[in-house]
Length: 208
Image 1 (tube, rainbow, N blue to C red):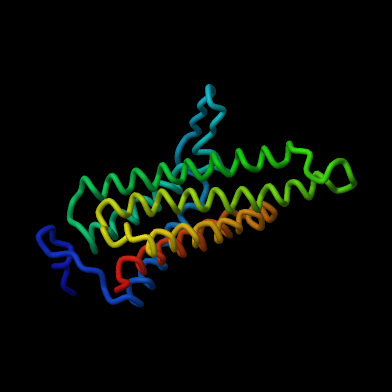
Image 2 (cartoon, rainbow, N blue to C red; image 1 turned 90 degrees about the vertical axis):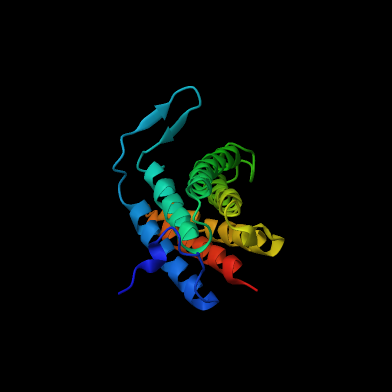
């Protein structure tokens, strides 16, 4: 098996469209499974902001794994520029943190609102709506920053049709936060979301 395509002086080029999409989807499935395992990192509590990361429900390693995978594929297929690819990884990680914080804020605001008043079952309905809105908004923001980061080395992702598809896919798959929270299984969210967003990036890279 030849490994010349890994050489830094080899011109990067993605495979044909369907193959690239399938490869990126598989990469997303792998990082999604990694993201769903218990965090190997210690808890980090930021008391001033009330933000908790590296916990069971907010694993920082999820953003690191997905960001590293996207950066590696961009290096392999788009640009052999370590600085740009590392910056892309950093923005994907920031996108993960922004998505988590946005989803948490939206859920908290919805549950604490007067939506549905005080009728029987109002709180349960608010929680359901809160999870759906949280997943939609968090998924869109996470995908948006992932697209922005990917666009640093990949000019093709800067096209409106490319990054808009990534954002829409991320927002729609973010709705899986509801069943993931209901069943206490983050794998239901992480695997499809990361696979679909990665596949959308590949589609944007190879679309004529």
